Image 1 (cartoon, rainbow, N blue to C red):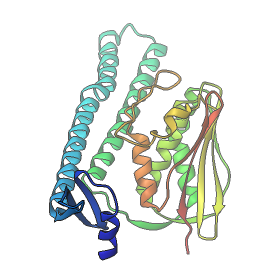
Image 2: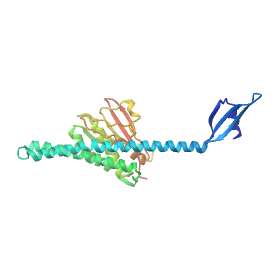
Image 3: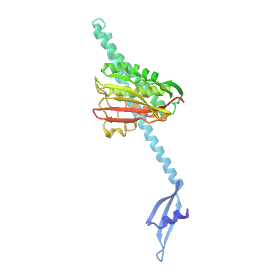
Image 4: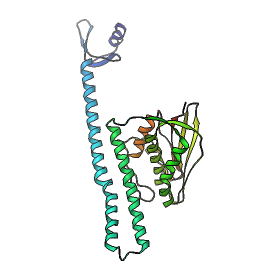
Amino acid sequence: MAKNRIAVLTQVHRGRSEVQLHDNMHYEVTSQSLPGGARLHTFHDITEQKQAEAEMIAQWDELARSNFLKDKLFSIVTHDLRSPFNTLLGFTQLIADHTKKATRQELGDCAREINRSGSRLLQLMDNLLRWSRSQMGATQFTASDQSLSTMIQGVIKLQRKAAEEKGIALRSDPTEEFVTIDRDMFESLLRNLVSNAIKFTKPGGSVNVRVEPMGADRVEIFVTDNGVGIENDRLGSLLEFIVQQSTNGTLGEPGTGLSLPICSEFAAAHGSKIHVESDPEVGSTFSFSVPKVQ
């Protein structure tokens, strides 16, 4: 304490200033001249005041974040959920009005559009519910040993139709690894990454899922596409929900900006981070790791 105070006294102080002498101790230093050229330095402990200020700033930040999340939630409910509902209502009304006149081809086209909107609505609701639960701290990690190949093939099967509709080759490399994961979190994480890869890949492109060992106790899963890629200035904020804005896919597929932040949270629950490598008009690779069965 004495050495720290002497160090402060040897500095030039004019009027009032603040110094931190310990990791969590703050002082206000008042300096004034005395007769004969001396100076009087007075130390006033303002640690509690600084702590109160920090707590107030944190509360304001949390309030601002809560307001942002509330506004984002309302935006999703009022816009992103209305769009697929409008599509469903529109095509069902079209079928109802023209059942006798419509051809089998026209009815089939309507049914496919209804199915597409319903699938998007289901995925959107799933993401929205998972995101809401994570924000409220209600998401619990339940670990179980799973075949990585089975999990990947399950996601591939779910996304096959979306890939085929765009003429995208969706494939995965074989793996015999067994991993310890939260089954629901992992499936949601991988499904969102594959879905995004399809969304931002042009018709005729490809999306591939592969697995590589990562040290002795983890494996890394890569989702690679040859799509439109991502600009460098967006890579830093890509996984941050607060600043992330949704982007339409190559065929105008809408988004909410929720999927990647959800992926980031679920990867963190498995002790990992989402790594992104991308070049505009070349493609992107998203990867994360999970622990092997020990």
